[in-house]
Length: 127
Image 1 (cartoon, helix red, strand yellow):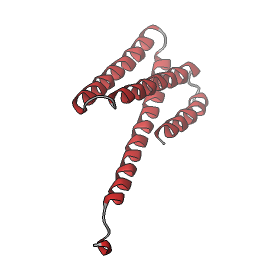
Image 2: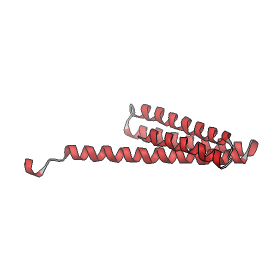
Image 3: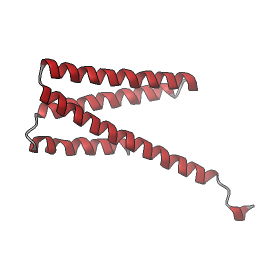
Image 4: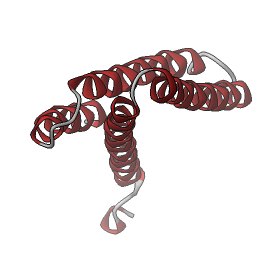
C-alpha cells in the first residue's frame, strides 16, 4: 500500500515536471534518491526484525538519520556543482514520494492495529 502510493506520486510528478518545463534530470534524480532510500529502509527493517527491541530501534533510527543526511548532501552537491533547478526538482519529487510512503505506512499500521484489536476483543454477548 505504501509503495503503491509512492509510485503513483512519482508517476504523477513526471508529467507535472515536464508540463512546467522542469528538467527531466531532476525528476530522475528525485526518483532514484527515493528508490535508494526506500530500498535501504526495507533492508534495514528486515535486519532489525532479527534484533532485540533496543538494538532494532537504534539501528533503524541511525539508518533514518544517515539516509536523510545522504539525500541532503547529494541534493546540496547537485545544486552547487550541476544545477540548482535539477536539485530543487529532485528534492520536491523525493519529498513527495517520501511523504506518500510515510502516510501509506502509517495508514497500513493503523489498519493492522485496528484489525488486531477487533480480533482480540471479546463480544459482550459471548460472556
